[in-house]
Length: 407
Ligand code: AMP
Image 1 (cartoon, helix red, strand yellow):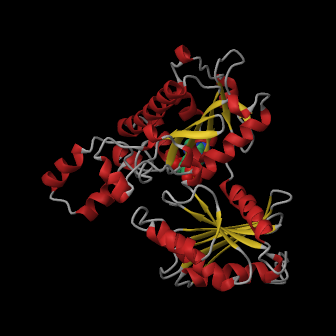
Image 2 (cartoon, rainbow, N blue to C red):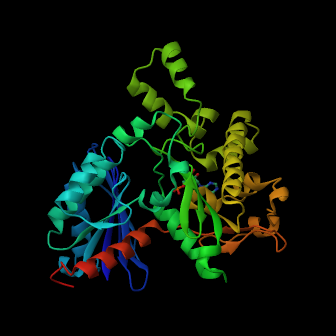
């Protein structure tokens, strides 16, 4: 089934047109800087010429029109009619406590996504804009919401409750939700395909290390703990997000620097993490290059980043009472031998031994083992594919509903 996957940010729309029967990207692309003087439009059809242009695109609806025009243009030879697209899958960051699975989007679902605006003010509003824009452009097909939080719905109460008055959970649903669920789900499923053990008996730790980063403990196929929490701000040190800090620091800096709540929010979300620590960059490649040139703060940023990963891995081995495999994925996890090695060094006590040669020579884009053959815990690189999970879930739900006249 041909499914269009949409992932909307506040000023961007990413898309993938996926043929689910072949698990293949027919075309993918992105409209960036929506609403700026000029927007950037990229299209990457499979096996054909990729393009990058500038245009004036003032809102998400125009971005969707631009994408549809490109896909439908006879010159590009991708689809010949909107009816070739059988369903649309939308990435929605926060599903609150309500959604433990992907769902067909109806008025109730739209309202629930809106109700979660408070919980994810940076993500859910643009996600909903994307849904509305896609529905305007493709009104006759089923639209499905796939939530970043859904996979972590299985967290037990002892992992999702915070040590604050319980009435705050009951009244405002303040609890750990966890994010990157589709990625943790996908890479763990890829791992189950290559092993000879019933999923029920497996214990896995998945490390999604990209611009945002999170780690999940997956016991018997279910997420039992994860490093992001109420919002995607907690857990690991990220590109520009602080990750875990002592909450008292917030009172202290608000007083010392006379910050408003908005500037505190910006400080922790946009000026902290690797960028804040290094004072140089949020991009790991830049930090590694500068650290090699002897920059002490860039080196420290890398050290803190890896130390935090090591701590989470250790704590999840303790909470699951063991671990069969540690999986690295996303931009940094898939591409940086240095970060993988440093995050796992001196963990022989826990049965983790990285094979330096395998780690250094790992091929881009492939599933591969990078632990030694004697390592008690295996270590893998498994490339993530969140869009494919969204497309497959969408196809399943669209098939089940038979809502589309073209199915
Ligand atoms: P993502 O959010 O998954 O696209 O990941 C983005 C992050 O991956 C950025 O910090 C990049 O610097 C990092 N990254 C990509 N390639 C490499 C590489 N070869 N070595 C280190 N970091 C990388």
